[in-house]
Length: 159
Image (cartoon, rainbow, N blue to C red; front, side, top):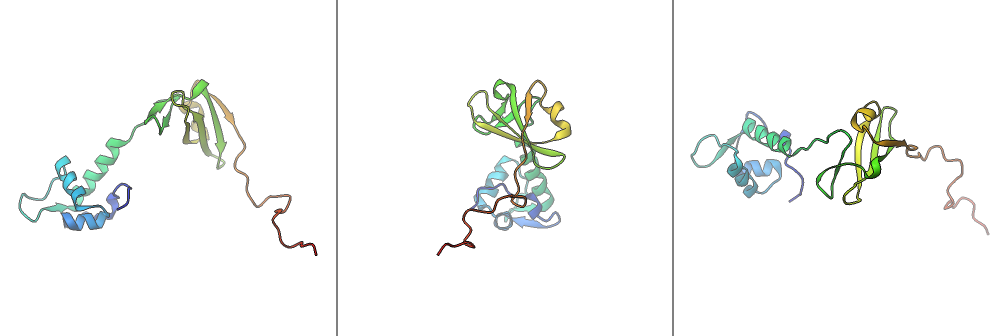
């Protein structure tokens, strides 16, 4: 099985599913569906086979997803190693533009010194990262505008 989260959009709202049908629909094990039932997923009734209404399943999965989300306070970024919102080390952040109106922030975690990343709009930069020194770096280079050809070219072979 895969390690991704179950996609609630794969469940039809007006259908009813057994545990095994729901597991096949969401590409999870049927024991996962039983765990969801223990965590609060309500079946249609208490009879066997246990049936789940699609709309109830979708609402349950969406509520599970929103309960896991963590928003970052202004001036912080989410560190994947610490699993918490942390301030950048020394208040220094690099902004690399990817599009004309948005780009990526990159900073070092002040606690574990891991590189943190965050996608942000340029207009929100001052509001989201107050008190931080933001250095705007050059965007990614494209292959279309290269002045010199590749050195691995076979077109000019010496005999």
